[in-house]
Image (cartoon, rainbow, N blue to C red; front, side):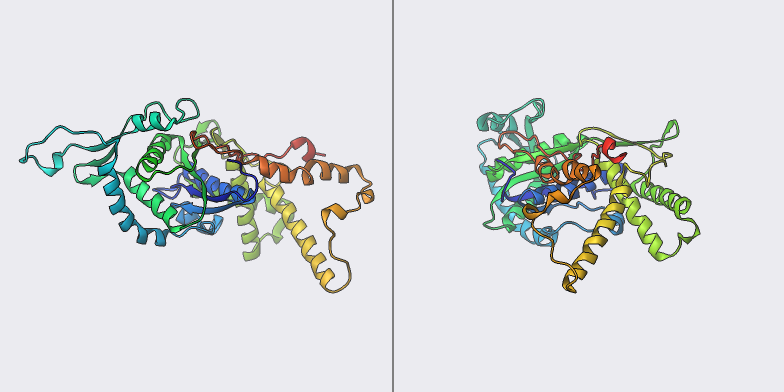
Length: 383
């Protein structure tokens, strides 16, 4: 199934906001928000499922993208749970338990489980390598009187999909750390078994984040610690460049936005399956030509230029900008102008399209390349 064109609905499922905000969860949150925008740019109507924004970082990185409606999902969960209970009992993959004596406590009841191995074989799903784990065998759905977390997650996912009514769900993207990859595949298979989900479910698995402080590892650094540190370093860099004028609320806002851009680039410029290694003491280049602050600065400059131009167009001073096909490229005379055109402007739509590949129903591999947007060819930037 190709990502090009109007591709239908995409569900993005993640749990970045679970527990304390460590650096790996920060990476997962930023990946979720980035994946949402990449899918949207490739024609998908994206709906988020799960808590993708860490509450204490709300002011820095914003709220969940449009399409999330967790309160509505909770309303639907009760009715979906009853249906899925029936589906478990009626499943042809349900494992038979030995008869139990009536005197046994409900706490010692044999687990209710399904055979994932038989289901995978019947459906022709690929295993090994980048596909489903070969260790997927028995999925425990209920232990004693308690339904497992995987079952509850299936209820939530199915409730979210049910809320979309007749919309064409084209793909479900699970974003999870490498430590949670096996569990997330269990959820995937269980949902397929109970609800006959036929659309591709793919898994964007990301590696951890480690950081160094000098020559030693800084193991206890949290997401808030990193953001605070980068904000302080950014302020120091601005003071060195601009002097004592760097003070007041407006400068604080500017520095916070720049610091968030730096953190985004640190987390997103590395391929998702590769560990991010941060040097907490590295301050060089914070407002140089190779990172988030540089991109943010130039984006602000360009936005201001376009805004002023639009105001002048409305005032009648200039004509509106022509369509790209009508641009007179003969006006470009400097080598730098042609370099910008060929190295950045013309390739950008193709770059965005290439970030999302094809999804296949029998393989969980997510062909989403989250690092491509943030990779800036340094040889061009240094010119």
